[in-house]
Image 1 (tube, one colour):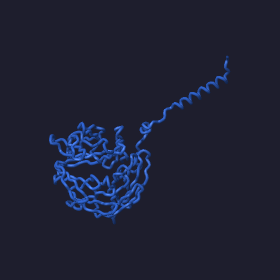
Image 2: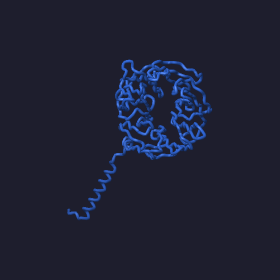
Image 3: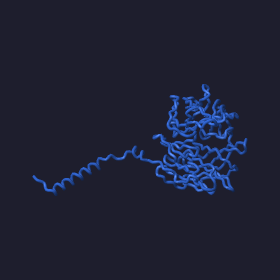
Image 4: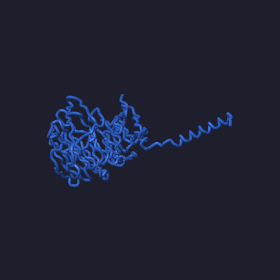
Amino acid sequence: MKMTIPTIMKTALIMFFCAFFVVGCTKAPTTPEEKEKQQVLHELPLEYENFRKVIGWVSDEEVIVHAGEGNEDTLYIFNLFSGEMTTLYEADAIILAAVISTDQQKIFIQMVNDENRELKIINLLGTVEQQTTIKTNGYLNINWNPVNQDNLFISYYKQEQEMIVQNWNITTNEITNVESSSLTPIWYSANLYLYVDNLNDFSLQTGELYMGDIRTNKVTPIRSQVTNFYLNNDTFITFSPSDFSEDELLLNRQYPFMVDNGFVAIPKVSMNDRLIFPYLTQSSREQAIYGITSKEPTQLEVNSGEFQLSKFDFDSQKSEPVIDLPDNAPISISKDGNYCLYGWRHEYMIDLKEQELYPLIKAE
């Protein structure tokens, strides 16, 4: 039977729409993995001269950013993937230090202006929950208690040889002295803390590990030949020069506490005969431990060295290089373990899956 032109056109249109419908219906939905790949890191919407520092993580997608102009500083919450930045707290003063609590719910702020030297605790809504004053104009060392978030150590040098170490109880707003011969005691539990006494050794080649108790204000020596350490939840790693090679620093993992459970040897880094310790980070309990390591033994007064982010395997006593980095600078990993802040001002982001380094702000 001979088909007319209108019939042919009608048939062709029906076939076209059927094919379109089939293609549309068979298109695979976007998987969570594809969505994750589509996430793009945004740069900070700030002028470079106003950028102070990225303070740290408050979620897997958000960080606290410190910025300022003149003598007035501001804290922002910045979403790395949406690019949205909201004002958290505006200070009519210079913010010298800001530290996020372990549960990522509170922020310690040290502020200085012509009249006051204030310490404040704010929440993620920017509400001031506690405040007090302090006499020093210098930077404070801060360590939040990971178990009892209402306690934190504050420490500083009052004079060149006079060290002040105190505990701030946020609930009672009381500040009490803490027994420590180190400026950087680290909380171990709700009441116990650890520190290293380097015994006035400028080179930091020697040291003794102590445990203190804020309830009794007494300290107890618990291990010798420890020059520094890293502590995160149940992860406890001591640093000590190698007995086998002058060019190595030993990282000893201990689990349970004070029970040796593997080690990694890394190239030693020093400056003017003084040990430079690596920066370490871990997302959560029993997860991978990363650190900044040098590719070879380095004396920084001679050359700047070559550094990399490494992933440690204490069972096999090896470290796996992840990505080359320009310096031995601080790092802080997100709790999901996907991204890591890097840099003296945390001005870079490391994508651990893609092994790429991204600037968070454009340099001038």
